[in-house]
Length: 261
Image 1: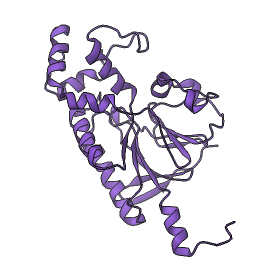
Image 2: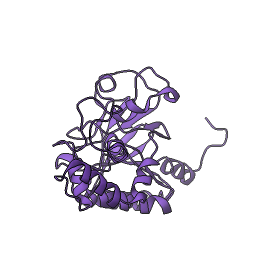
Image 3: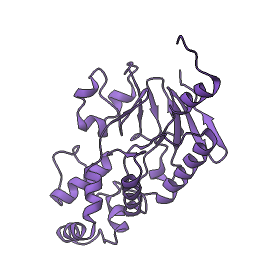
């Protein structure tokens, strides 16, 4: 215990300074993203912490109707607000690789995945840039490289794959259990599923992640899953994190996330 106990008002300021906001996988849903930021703004006003960062866990694009708008909105705000942090997701990575290499499989992606295959979401992303995904593949790729702004591509290419804040590590998909954070492979950070999701390993910091949709935000003690399936017509969740405790932000305020046992 400190030899100089904090005054009540100083202790309250210290607690609120520890707030971190996070938003799950966006997948082209601009209106939901803006609504999530409105809930964060309301929570800031209630809690009085204007400094708290907002961390977006990646997958800005694919499956939803307005990937172009999401990238533009986030790029504009990230450039002027240092509290805004946007991570790289596997869909963002696939979009960049498709633009780089063109039609056909990319050996850096998992086997049997094609960016413009039905269900992957790349077709919806191209449509958001007014590109018809049903044309000849070579022509579609050439048109995409011509019509998708270089600023959008540069923004995605500059996204980090990990962010540390407070008692948490923020990544898109998860981490490889038992491997130190400085030795994690990018492929795991944006793609891992089962080996991470089934692990009861104490990772040290709380791992806050998306990538694998859940019906509601889940706190497993060693990880916090916040992708609640916006890609499939479900809500986009925003959470406030203080220490290792999490709260879902709603229009009526905070709802605590119970730890699963």
